[in-house]
Image 1: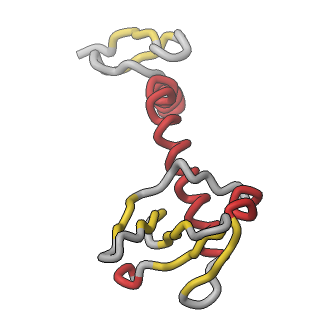
Image 2: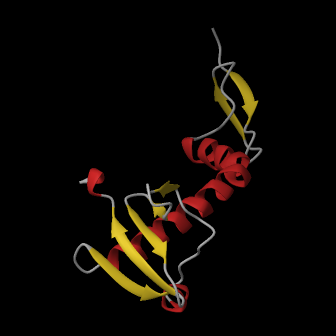
Length: 121
């Protein structure tokens, strides 16, 4: 069985190999697959990065069991209120917005109460 000359789908260089081989190297294969998936994965990656940043901001500003901070201070730190993982409504109809295990409750006069979900520990 002789190896057939093929052309790499990524760089166009000829190479020897199996009949079903499409790339001359792992580098070309990875590069090709990364370019195909970059559009769909960049959207998800950007959302994930925003959620992780929100989580870090909440975590770093939680001192003790609860902390208060202004909405403007959170915004100044780069917090994006449009991204969160879930909302939990208490029996008294308070809505805590969570970013993973860290959450916040909007209070009066532009204040925010930061909490950590104890079930996550």
